[in-house]
Image 1 (cartoon, rainbow, N blue to C red):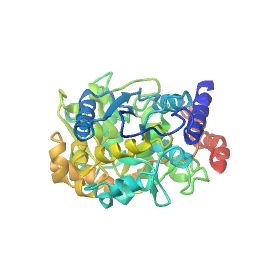
Image 2 (cartoon, rainbow, N blue to C red; image 1 turned 45 degrees about the vertical axis):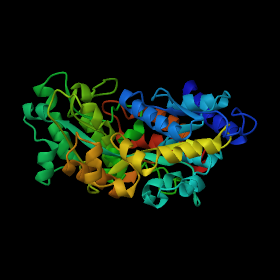
Image 3 (tube, one colour; image 1 turned 180 degrees about the vertical axis):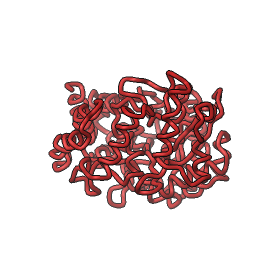
Image 4 (cartoon, rainbow, N blue to C red; image 1 turned 30 degrees about the vertical axis):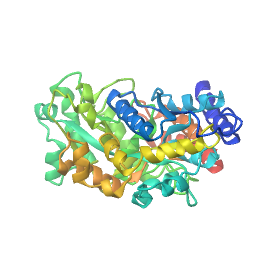
Length: 429
């Protein structure tokens, strides 16, 4: 708990220092001399990093004075590591930002307005950016983060494991118009009996700590953690109680999902299905089992799709804020967006079609891309975020302990969550 409180404090302090211009140098330096830019990322994927390096090399061919380095930070502690760098006087020039932290970064004053640079770059085609994808990163008419990855949540499945268990696959259930959360849970419950030690369904590598990964389930129930204006806790709403009762039964009664403290990696063959983002498809390149992908199942609220986002921001008080924005304009231009689309679903309308995405995603069929990626981005909603998210995250996580118990009183446990977070929602910090 002390560590989590420290993390919340570091985020606020780091952004305040970045907004004040502390740690990044007293003033901007000449962009005509040697320029070294650093972008923090959370990927350690060698193929992705190689692509970034190639884009940086292409940029250097026309901007020989600019060198770009990509600094991979640990995913689990990324935001803490980033803000610690800022607070410690070593801020990057550009940084990846989780969607949950977007309100804090966008409102902090630490990021530069990208709008004039992107609109003013020849061939950039700013209006190609889908408005739904830039909404979270915009304040007024200013864009403070480029949403380089808009990645829908989908269900990947191991067809071999489900067939062995005598269960229908998601695609078979989709074809029969029976693809629901209940059907998914019933199929998942058959797996442990057929293959002891294996599990049926895992939601986004869920380890019962990152509670907001459950948003993919909540969407189908019409549930959300707080109201649209962010001021009222919704954990005690009937849709949320229904969704969390379903989940509790799936874990503790039907054994369709692993219990807390149990790791089950779908990509390593530990489970039959997983809910995760489509950007993980590349992980299945060398899979030893037959796999498929389907949209999120329908719930009482229908088939609701959800996507997560990641943005790139340029720190406005760094040594080379304009050079950083210029490089971002190159990194995210139409040609490079098409290259990046093999890993990160782009925000560009011109690329949101099966034909364009197929060229960058050879592992997925045009039909899969159209039904799960294009449909997910065009019709889905972004994961919830909130000002002061780190403190809210900490409060929810601690309050959920009583829920993750066999025989838990689900409505009472969720009431405890609201009691813990309502003061934070009302103050927004």
